[in-house]
Amino acid sequence: MILGQEPILLTPGPLTTSPATRQAMLRDWGSWDAQFNRITASLRRDLVDIVHGGDTHVCVPLQGSGTFSVEAAIGTLTPRDARILVPDNGAYCQRLLTICRYLGRDAVALPIADDQAASAAAIDEALTRDPSITHVAQVHLETGAGVLNPLAEIARVCQKHGTGLIVDAMSSFGALDIDVRSMPFDALVAASGKCLEGVPGMGFVIAKRSVLEASGGNSHSLAMDLHDQYMYMQKTTQWRFTPPTHVVAALRAAVDQFLAEGGPTIRGERYRRNCRTLLDGMASLGFRPFLAPEIQAPVIVTFHAPADSKYDFNAFYAAVRERGYILYPGKLTRIDTFRVGCIGAVDDNEMRNVVTAVEQSLSSLGIRQVAPLTHPA
Image (cartoon, rainbow, N blue to C red; front, side):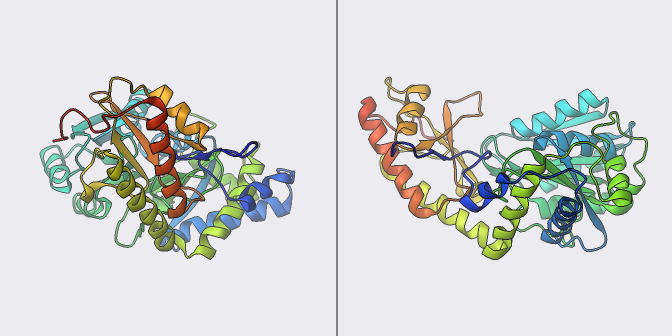
């Protein structure tokens, strides 16, 4: 790494942002300033347009990390006597279950292996078996391993049963095409610091207007009451409480770049090139990905850790960081893994440099046995 140069973040957020996005944070904004409120309003419109929400859906931004907005969506858009099915194939699905427990919502887990995608047929069967289920809370891209779940098929099953659908699209929004016209949902939750390539600090919920307007009184919390936030913004154009002004300004700049690049289709293709380059390069070094190609999302890749006795993630992390790249630890508990993100303001040439940095790190640490001891099932 060149002295004074910041390392590249190969994580699922925060991630490496463009100079233009960082530049946007150099101005201070008043939270009641009319120009700032116009920025908020333009973002709300543009984010709804990304999913073709038209007049049926609205965007409600919220301070905090994406998890804040996930909790706000469940707490506001489901009644307190809701019964929520959570297809569970990873850590962020389990976080949904934890949120439901904290909120006092009755949650039903549908267990799925963490190297398998959720099955629309299994969800269909669960809803048929238990008609008391009112909602499905679905992680679109389970970032724990990088699994892409079939949102369109799951949305159709929910529509068939008249079941509400809340989508955690934290790591997919902006990179994968999501169209509410063919993937109907009550709410979709994402955040500023993921595939839109903004900075962290703001989440948002794209909610079906009719569901949101009927949700008054559901929320457990003043700060996380999306209905109250929406009504206040509609009335005043302002945030209820102090907004993350610099984050909003940076997101406006990031979305401008996103739209100029060509939207989710073109951005997703850049990420897919990044992912293919990473997978090919790491395979040449002997690494094996955890997931099968058909369910691997082009956002973050989980690799089996080297079987070599000299491998230690912390030492490996430090060696790669010294060469300019920050990796992510594994999120699985049953096997040793690490993760490499493919998103952010990076291209496939950067991913080739990543592979070189990994190769040099392995050599410096004396790691020879790169593949795991057993081939993944």
